[in-house]
Image (tube, rainbow, N blue to C red; front, side):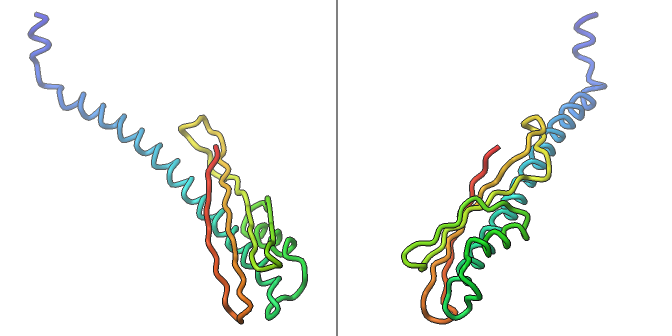
Length: 143
């Protein structure tokens, strides 16, 4: 009798479908968290870029409207939903490093609903020639 139950193949597809549903649910949760992290990383990098450019433009002799690059960086970071952590000017005002942090709005499902904090850094190199600025960016994630 026992061997007859194991050799019966009538409900085999139901077991495979149930296992695939569980796998697809897990993949969906992982994709949700990855998409949320990448979205927040993009927001943080945008805020850092905008803050660095604002601070850099504040220092240029052609576009400078004041002498407060930290205030300009703080304002543009706040406009983009970030918190300014650091704004450093160096080499006689020829470059600006800006670091901002964004706390993610969506909760991560795989790590127990904890919120992720993404930190992004941008730097703006200033050239005395009109309109010549160069920037580069990096970002990190901490959960």
